[in-house]
Image 1 (cartoon, rainbow, N blue to C red):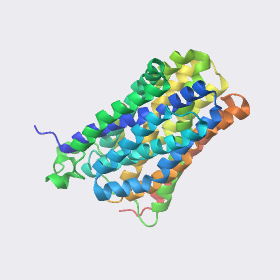
Image 2 (cartoon, rainbow, N blue to C red):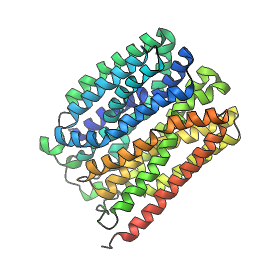
Image 3 (tube, one colour):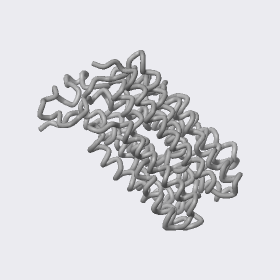
Image 4 (cartoon, rainbow, N blue to C red):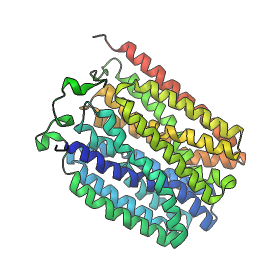
Length: 409
């Protein structure tokens, strides 16, 4: 039986996500630790450069979405690959703190095209029945990036040194990603190869329990739906990015460097498990409710680490928090896709992603500033828990208001 080409696109995006999250989001914790250790620069100063990485990415999210709509994914993602690989390699060549900023500008440009907006905009035109599953499976590569990326980055830097290690990592990523993007991401959607979404017209037997209701966004409720989801995931991801960036530095005093690397990998494993479960259920559940429940679990995990900073609590709470990482990362575009439909997805999610990333870009710097101000991570983690809970309320309340404003059919 011939495999629907859309699943090949998903598989390619899985690999792209693995490298993007390994070198981008999760790699930032390695850069923070390695650079501060090598040069003795303050954590807050290096974290501020990492914040620029997220700010640059946020500023061009809408451009990325529109560019993929106009020219297709291949040229945009190839450009992103060049930027990300170049940025990673150059981080290892710095000799002054200010030189980190242009490196992270390049990294941010690459991250913007190879992460959530680029991948979901590439996948969205290919599916309708499996809209949630396809996006979740594509983004699942992020968990592989967390599981394998951090230990391999630490190994490369440890064995080869900061300079040669990061050059090697950048070269390997370019060798893998460039041919993959060139060969697989040639088409914008199934119509270009004479196919329909999901590979065929939906048969009743294939529908299962998938939620196939039409988009609910109207002129009356689109603002509350879009901005409640945007606020919720902006808060959730601000905390999440800050936590991930500082995870190695947070865990190292209790677990040592090797133990901290293993904990980050284990957190990536639970995120991977979370995404596996999400892929099975996402097309037949209320995604806003699911997102709210996950944020409650993450709030509890952050509070536990803040109140009881012991090895067992750190490990257990990190694993619980990690389970929710994939959900919070993935559910944003799934909510927008379900409530606004495929036709409006690129522009609508591009707008949401710009705001989400502009706000969440401050996560690493805020965690660093709070750590330096309080002399430890405890109070900052408690503040982060409150922000996550606020995001949960925005997601649930906004959904109920939007539903009330939607005319009954």
